[in-house]
Image (cartoon, rainbow, N blue to C red; front, side, top):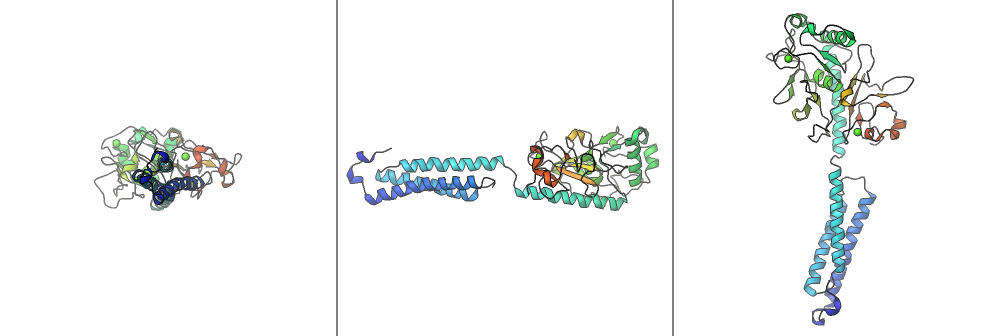
Length: 351
Ligand SMILES: [Ca+2]
Ligand SMILES: [Ca+2]
């Protein structure tokens, strides 16, 4: 820095020195105020007002430096102010970048969960069924079903309750549940896939989409007959449909996805089975579990007979199990930002 002592007195001016000094102090005070403000209000994502303050601090430091250069006066305060302002702005930027989701994403997720609730209700009304299961075996040829075990039997009975007229074609030909135009091996859909299959209908590829179920009562997978289709009951966005297990059926990523198949999570869905009970393993390969009210009383949190769970901004599902609004703050960290259809805030107690 230019020491005051070595500057010829002819270049000195009292007023310019005062201006430079004031600018120097202002350039320090503004970023200090900005950082203090941001620390007090650290939960805020944007730090808009503190960023403006720090920006003004940067401006003041630049003016201070120019004043010092022109009048060959001291610039040390302006330099300190510049360093502080830049540090504050970089800090705010990093904080902003580390929290890519804001309240609007959270609100959007809650809104979608409510839309799912309405869609599930509309499906039940339209098909005159009392529940939508979260695990189903889809056999394109009825002979593949075998009828062995409760899942095979329940799946056959449920599909026939939706489509009572398919039996003949199902038996003699095939019902193209996955929409690929040819008979395919049986698949078992988990909860997240059931949610999209029942509400979306036959999956479409290129681009990803959902056809609904055909108006052809004998063949709900008849893509050529588009009249009197049932569904889709939910407006699935193509860019969030994902075939996570490679079986040709979609899951639906929540709005927190960042186009990263390894980390993005679809909505988990738990619905009752024919016995009126949940199965905690219905989203096993997704890593999601439903929530229950009591250990000895294995009652699940019920809202119209199903649970929809978003893994939240961290894209990791909470542990499921015992939960109540009173114990929300004790949930494992992964579950704190999860969103569900049976609690109006985050599962960790936040809004
Ligand atoms: Ca097929
Ligand atoms: Ca989470």
